[in-house]
Image 1 (cartoon, rainbow, N blue to C red):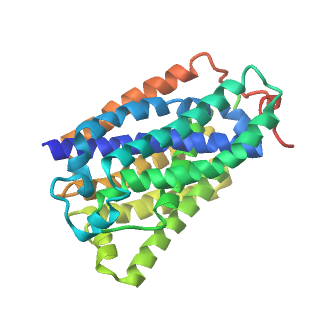
Image 2: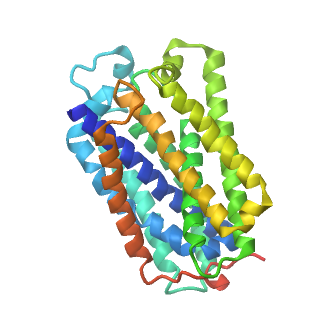
Length: 339
């Protein structure tokens, strides 16, 4: 029962954290490149990034009681040679320190970019100067963080492409979220809709490329400790979910987003964005859950409940942050849009 709860909580927490980090990454990209779509969706990205303090609080139950149930290196009697080799890095005090550093960087960046945009609307160059190097820090911290929080649930398996895999998924989820928000505003611009549709298409293709690359590298290497990851996901219905993700998270959105009609219609683009978010839920489920529990692909009650509980809290903070914000197009001079 305890293992099921903590595994379900980690899965739910990882999905909603990816949504928060996707918004923060896009916010950094917006202040670096200053695209037109960034100006139009700035408030939604700020609101998504502002949920990061909540996600820090929601990880505390795992730190307090879930570590031995989720991470082989933290389990009592963890004497396997590979775990002993990792012990200087994978130990509880250093793990907690890294968690604090990750969230300090993310929350600090989100707070600075959100607050500085209001009292100093003309100082967009200063935000750009911060955001450009901050993107490097963001990529590095996300890579290390999800290695610690998700990949470390596997005792032997590792992947050097794991960080960029999650970064791509976060960007895809973030663009899907701001697309859903933007299609509900009163002043939908056809140009911005096309830009968001193109972003969804680009990240969908890149996600497929990264996922296929990881699979082919592991398949061609044919090493037992690496193949175990896909072997655990090739039985008890997990292989069906994996095949469905290849169809649902790549092929169907790819074909839909190739059409200009989809990117001209707020309704159609919103449907595609909602579908992509649903696929992101299943993708995180396929990545996280087989590593923390054995059994069939059918979700347990705790897994559904945890996803809903964390989701309700996340959406509440997101909506609270959006309250009073401008729902229509943000003035271009606020972020210094490039022509």
